[in-house]
Length: 179
Ligand code: 5GP
Image (cartoon, rainbow, N blue to C red; front, side):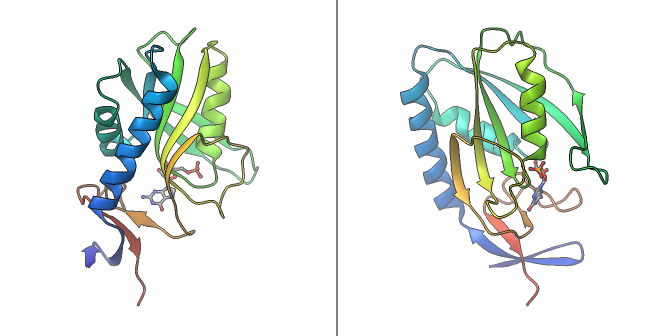
């Protein structure tokens, strides 16, 4: 199926049913690993809000909490760049088992920088749960404990991911189509 968003066309890459299945599997794996630890999930806005809602429900009945942060990255000519929390955290991090929920890991800059900032607050552990990973684009050291899908280095939208603010509402994932 092809969809149009603004000036671009996108073709279905991963169906809603396949996403639902993988998110359920991830929830089961998290329950196995975190039973009794009451992890604190941190969803990275804006893109992760749909994934976060589904993954948290896939973790029921395990006790867990969720909060959100909004990060703004600026990558200059230097490889390190800078990362700023536009919306900060309203939870105590010290001693908590943190699971970072990210829609897509591209170069890995956002999460690797954010994790080094979080470590400053002495969490008990930090793990990453990513919906999508572009392994060919990864350029920063990241241990991605949970991932639903590895995808090619293409631009994708849907299931929370946007193109210029639009396209988040689709329940499948679509890849830029230039055919
Ligand atoms: P990284 O810091 O890993 O290079 O980039 C991560 C962020 O870039 C994601 O949270 C997302 O906001 C954005 N991003 C990377 N690839 C894509 C993509 O294919 N589609 C969309 N919509 N956003 C992307």
